Amino acid sequence: MSGVNADLFRRLTAALHQAGCGQPTLVIDKQALDHNVAALNTVTARGFDYRIVAKSLPSPGLIRYLMEKTGTNRLMSFHLPFILEAARHFPDSDILLGKPMPVVAANRFYDRLGTQAGRFDPARQLQWLIDSEDRLREYAALADQLGCHMRISLEIDIGLHRGGFRDMAAFRRSLEFIQGHERLTLSGLMGYDAHVSKIPGFLGGLDKAFTAAAEDYARHVDLVREVFGEAATDAMVFNTGGSTTYPLYQTPAPANELSTASALVKPTDFDVPTLAHHQPAAFIATPVLKTVEAPEIPMAPRLSAVLRKIGVMPHKACFIYGGNWLAQPVWPAGAHCSKTFGHSSNQEMYDLPKDATVFVNDFLFFRPAQSEAVFLQFGDIALVDGDTVREWWPVFDAGHV
Image (cartoon, rainbow, N blue to C red; front, side, top):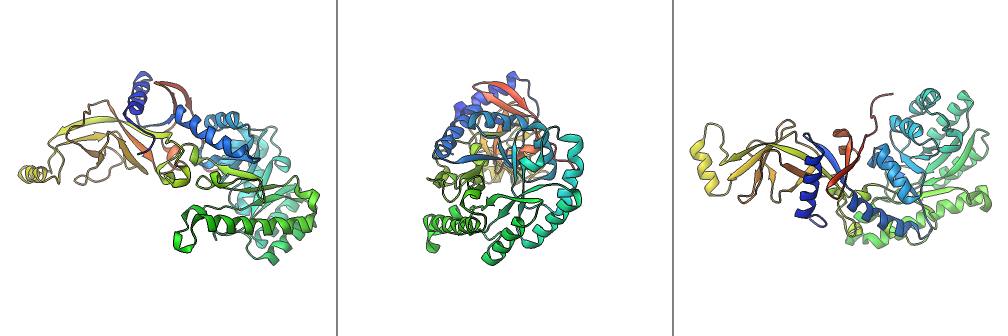
């Protein structure tokens, strides 16, 4: 596994022991995080604005740290409670929705905003994402009902085919509808390109997909210029990119803004060639509760001995605090979930190599497969700098609003 080694886990273990940590904990290694941020800044320095994808790093402290390191106040949000949290924690931010919200959720946002947002002004600082003519009309009706002004970003399909405007006639009608509505303003476009890094060679591969996506985006921008005029587009946000594709962008045209976040902590789902220069920065550390020599299948000691001899059962195992996460064990090397006991969210058993040195109160370390769901499962995030926990970062409240 690239970028992680025994010294790293010794450092993390020392930091967690010093901090008195005795439960499953989401850990971020500051050195790796800073390395990844530096890689991102190299790309955005080519002329792009940068937007933090808040769902992938759902912690105000972590987001604030990245804002300072990247010089941005731009966020992308995907969940109604998180929009409200972001408005409260970052009242000077600019928030772009990363997916279209049901109009009832938008209505709920305005209902709750008055008691939570302080100086955050959605008419200036929030961009609703619209993916169809029907949804556009729903939002226009809501704006009229509430007597509020809305900034609208249109989602365009640049090859992913997950939704958004694909038919250029419908796209033109929507542009003209916004232009003619007194409560709506076109703030820009959003085109997600996650498919680009996954196109196999027999379909043209990454290069062909990237070029096609850029051409699709350019057609939409050209139509925006035709309808609204060249000068109007100077202030618009043309957002694209993602964690697996952001390094591919060389010049800020047709898109002028890149979004990414998972790449900065690099879960296992992002072990892809375009991020080979990034380092894993996020880990789950969980205490070892029990160690077992010569583990046995219940009621079958002789069978267990035979299975150990032929390598089906391990000579050593341990039970951990919790388990069954969307994650893979990485330390001690060679640890894997026991096929004998299977998964458990309470005390999961892990088979260990015969030469593994693991004791009660040590930690088993995992790499999460993704960040957006996993980061919310462990309470405060531990930021480890060297062999010390420097900060504890609370996560967003994902509750119903």
